[in-house]
Each structure stands twice: as structure tokens, then as C-alpha cells.
Image 1 (cartoon, rainbow, N blue to C red):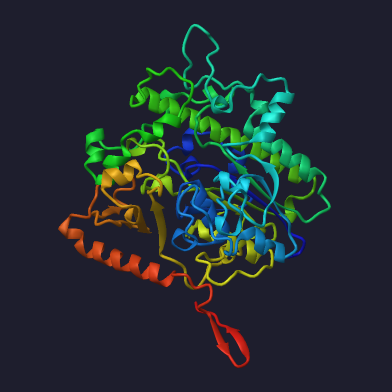
Image 2 (image 1 turned 120 degrees about the horizontal axis):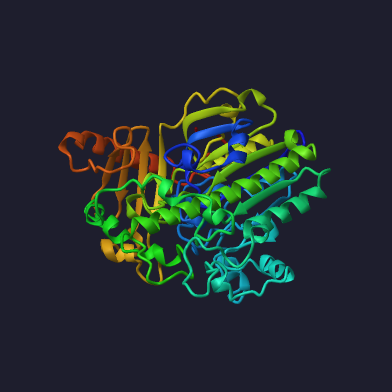
Length: 514
């Protein structure tokens, strides 16, 4: 344990980086997160290495690329033997407490077939103490709390429905849910966290708080449901028509089938035209309202830490698990290889390094860096084989002698029980329905398995990824260079958890392979 340092990790689900830096930053009010940036270090080029939720959190908490932890889909089990953040933190004397969810599917090989833990994909990563269960598909403590507040609970499938205040008209997306803001899922999680921390002020605690918001379904309690004027928001980045977007690549054609729309807003008028600009901008406005709700409760946590005298004793990380397309390229969700689905905020406050507070780091960082960074900062040992690197040198005002010049991203778009629309649309078998990305400051290559054509973008001249250069002869050398670079990266990061050891007459000797 390092100098009795307390640890707080806050994860917002599906929060885009450009809510803080980029196209949407001027259109969303996030005063508490922005104030925190002034007292912390912001990493402006941070990427989730995979998605959706389960795989992204597996990478955050294991420091491994999906190619190594292999929990590649929601519902795909993670091998029980992998080192992870909560288990390793315990070796340094911490009890990592989880408020929310880790979206971990547990290893069925070490559990009896009738174990209830195998009936849900939303279990808790081994090593965590589940201080508050707030899994999207369950959330029983929140349900019980709402019932105790006197609410007439609907069936859980309709918890996130918009409710029309006028029985004479169908619900609109920006109508509120049945619960009030002070009783929302975000408020309840924060209330529970603060109540628990209030009786632990004399302890060296380790808390991970994971908010489901602004993840869909997009429904927000007042005042967040109407906080932003849809007409005042910029339109998404996109080509002129759905046909133009579909023509980019077979994957994009399949991704445009609208599969994500069934859960975007619930309980609304079934005749709503979800492809219209009016609907798109309304949905974007609600998303931003939910982001502001998260900001308000993050502010409560920071005020509590300051008021209780713990702020300067606490290592604080604020991040998102992955991004959200939010209508860009006429798409929603995150299982898309464009930047908005992967680029996310990362803000870290190490109270021992005030000289770096308010600073920005432009180096390319990945979500696999989170666990090595925390373990390093609390005085723990980073297990061999982790793909990520500690960010400590940046937090201390310097930088490593050697740092990556590209990020590595992955996506598996298969399901083992039945082909997904993306498999069907691309004609890929389960083992081939995946892609890998290597993204430098300027160029970005998307390599598809299954003999599908690649994508190549110039991220400086074309930051919205509107022009595919892969078939442009002028960029053939760049395409080849990045393809070779991606192959080399994946070879270098093949599982190395034991390759640094050598058996000798003196015993097992461990060597640094860097």
C-alpha cells in the first residue's frame, strides 16, 4: 500500500470524448468534470481498446487486449486464471469495492452447471467485493429502494420507458421516466457510495463506481430530459445519404440496418421516424442531458471528498468504458470501428503530483493502461504479460523514453448461438467475424478478417472518417506499412505471461522482456 493512498475509479458508460474536447464540448454543460480537469491530468487521446461493455471492462481491469483476455463479447466468459486489478490490489492491502457492475461473464469450467452465476452475463469480476449491485438487467437494490419511496413499479422491462404526462398523446423520447431525478439510478448509486464512504473515512478504501449513464435507453428525469435544445446541436458527422454510408464497406451496409434502434428510446410513439433529423437531434439532446446528470453526481463525490478532508489523500480516475456513435455516420451504439465508438475521456488526479494538475497529455493512451497505472501508483507489482503500460511518468511531469505511436483496437461482431446481422451482412463465419485497428496520429487502418476489404483514413485531413483511402493507389504504401505494423504489434503482444521466465538449476528466474 502506497502512503495510505485511497483509490476512487469512476466509470461512465458510453460517454464520448468529444463531450469534453471536440464537436459537442461547447453544447453540453459538465461543470464538475471540467473543474476536476483543472485539478488533475487529462489524457486527450485516450481510447478504449475494444467494445461493447463486457469486453471493454475486461480490458480495463486486466490490462489485456481482447486478443489475450478473450472475453470478446457480452456473455463470453473470462478465464478465471487471469490477473486483474481487484485481485492484484488485494496483494497491496486493499479491498476493492464495486458500486455498480463489471459486466463479467464468469468461467463456467470451475463452477457447477446449476450455479446461478452462470445464468447471467452480468456477474462480478473475481476480486471485487460487490458493495452495490447495479447491473442493467437486474438492479434489485434500486428496485427495492424505489418501492420503499412509494413508487408503483412497472415491470422491469418498462423501467426505462418514457411516460407521457398527457394520457391523450403517446410518449415522446424526451418525456421523463416514472421516477424523479433524486431517485434515478445515477442518484441512487451515488447516495449509496457516499453513505458507505462516510463511515470509512478512517480507512484506506478502494472504490470503483460504475454509472450506467449515458448508455441507452435514452430516457432522462427532469430537468435533464429537456435541458438541451435539439435544434441548437450540430448535426452528426455523416455522408450525404444512407446509401453513401452503406457503400463504404459491406460491414457498414450491415451496420445500417437499424438493429440498435429498438433499445434507443422505449415506450414512445411507434410511428416516430427514427431516421429523421428531428428524432436524431432529440436523441442526442437526451444523451447530453444524461451526461450532465452524471456530471452532477460526480460533483457530489468530489465535494464529499473535499468536505471530509480526503481529497488530497485519494487517487481519482474518471473515464468511460467505450464511446457512442450518437448518429455519426447514421449509426448508434458502439460496435462500429469509427473513432466515436472508441475515443473516450480519461482524467487522473494523483494528489502527490500537484505540478501536473491542470495539464493535458496528448500522447496516445489505451484503456489497458489503467490497471498497470493504478497498481504502479499504489505500490503494487504489475503482472507479467499485461499489454498496457503505466501512465505514472506522465503524471509526474515527464514521459517514458519509449511510448507507443499508435493505438490497437479490436471488435468481435459474432455470436456463437446464431449469426449476427453483421455476420450475415458480411458473409463471415463466427471465427472470422472480427476486426483489428491500428491508429496513428495521422493514419488509421481497419483490418477485417474473413477476406473483407480494409479501410484506411487520414485522421488529420479527414477526422470524421468520411473518405476511405484503402483503394487509392496513392496510399498503397501506407496501407502496406500499417498492415505490417498491425501484424507486428499483434505478434509482439501475443500472451507473454510466462515467456519472461526461464527454468534454471537455481529455480524459476524472471527476466524483463521489454
